[in-house]
Amino acid sequence: MDWRPEMQDEAAEKFFRYLESREFKTTFCEDCREVIFPPKVVCPRCLQGHISWRDLPREGVVYAFTYQDRSFRCAYPEVIGLVELKGAGRILTKIDAPYDELSIGMPVELSFFTSRDGLVLHQFKVKRNSGEDGDDLVADSAPTV
Ligand SMILES: [Zn+2]
Image (cartoon, rainbow, N blue to C red; front, side, top):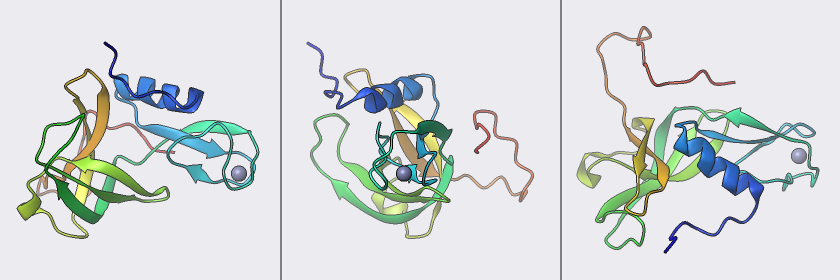
């Protein structure tokens, strides 16, 4: 049985395909310059369909978080929350960190995991501090637009 979520449209389909190749992208409206997340085929702001795909930032800060003790797709207990991505707004996401160790404003970075039903999904984890500010080489990060 295929437990994957029913895709609402081609934008959702494409978003999950990008995640499979470890790319974190969303749609961008070429008319009103709006970053649209979750990705859509039509801009919800100006209702035009001149859409392109852009990389989302791979780093952000924790805006809010909570914890769920039941989940259909993921292991539980688990932490979910809103992460603020610079220039893209706040997104709802899994956060791979113990609840007790998180705080508002904490820097986090993107990672990926595979759910029990085989979907590659995004999550954020607490950003490691290498001790050298501004000079980090992160092998798996892509340039943002
Ligand atoms: Zn628009």
